[in-house]
Length: 329
Image (cartoon, rainbow, N blue to C red; front, side):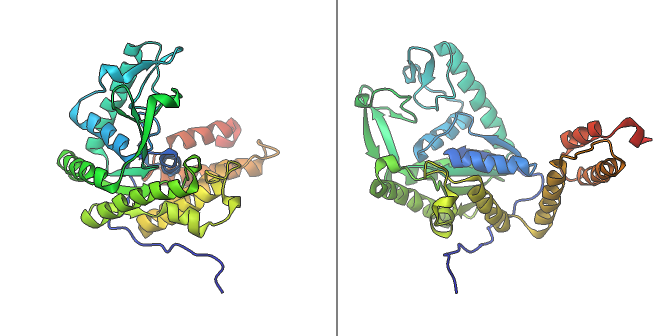
């Protein structure tokens, strides 16, 4: 008897290998994926312009990095306490317009360099709802708490994003032919839009994701939304706001993701890493006891063996500091 609608593991078109490099862009779920990748010792670069929610703003940030173009002067605004840019998250703020522009330029320069050498680009689409500044007609990435009356709200339908992404994918293929893309719809529901309009918004993202997955062999759709909303259909898997997934839910999605994208060799390596990371969290009552010191030395040997595959230099140094000088003799 089944009591859950489980999302089956479907093996991806391409396999993630130890040493692969990642870029994660999009909604706050992209940050969650970045943290899991970092913990598994993958090299990642996450949301250089801060969280971006809609597909056009994400594509625009990538195009800036690829072309060398930068946001126009009129996209910078003074909020009273600092300067921000309407095409980025408020993380990119500064005491002056020049300071803000410098941060954005540096982040985009880095993104361009990372895109050239990356193996994987993970795009997490959050919403199809966008805002246009009334005075300029500019589609903004973030309203920065500016009064609502200064913007109009609109929906980015599939017909308005398909061409944007066809052009973007072609540009990326020319820029880095080896780059593979994972596209996912954020499982975070935008309930302030109402559930009905959130579902409408997500439907356009699903259409875009499906189109890209079916059209391009190097693009994989990953069902993070379906896992949280259908498989983990219980509010115990949500934080107190009843919108964002708990750490337990994110870990469940990560395990499912790993089974989809990692081969057996990589899974075994990461399982060994997880066991060692758990060992490193152990807090003894008597740190200098012979038994614990022997445990530390045994763990150190395992870390040094695994260090051939993964960069565990910080963990090795952390452990060496816990081993007493006498026990090294």
